[in-house]
Length: 305
Image 1 (cartoon, one colour):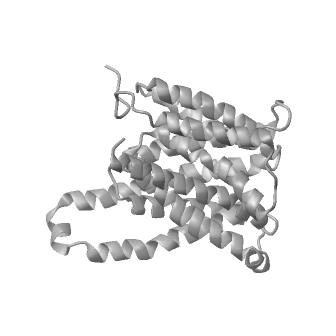
Image 2: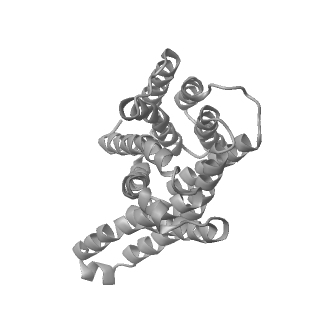
Image 3: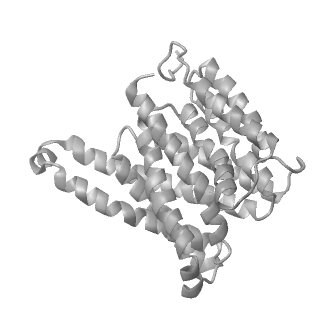
């Protein structure tokens, strides 16, 4: 594996860690505000955090290069377009997941959400992409690992399970859309645009379906701030940048580590104990990530002839 790919994988792993810890913040925040309100606040904060970074990078960009080369302007335009597309999908995925979790058990929701690690390569097949055998084996191992990590109840399907599954499907499309736009546009611009898009849509839905007040939002300031700055502003940007040199199937496997990290965060921060079954699930997921990075003679997914 080359250095660029290794660096991208490390960025994705860091994003997964931040998201894993964010489950604690989201759990606490939902004690004070509704789902649309929480998402609106964190997405808008996430977008706002990236504005100074975009401004700083623009100042460093040579003005003559901007005027002379149309490629720079095209990348910014593509970044905004990609961000709007990603933001719309992110809003739908996050909303379905949030309302699904309220209607099913946390364990079932975690396992169903993790199905995106299977959905992504399956979508790749429909897009006429060849999937290396090692990634298929990794998907199987990671799926078993996620089962051990998250599944604690029965297997019956209810409305909540269906909502979470739709959210997992949307997250799969989100990964593939980022994979399409990230090489063509500025990663930070894509990330900023997607947060403002998801935040504005969440604000509209908040006004229609919820009645938040300033006192409740202020009571949840700490989890909202973490979710906005770290989970959105930092982690999603790491995802966009990291996916530039990593295929979407491997990216989905690495990002699935957020469930393992959430269990570790719950253990350290909330004093929640890990059972032997859950520890075995962590081991399988990490093993799947290692296997997925073993060279197979193909550096990337190729289109079928």
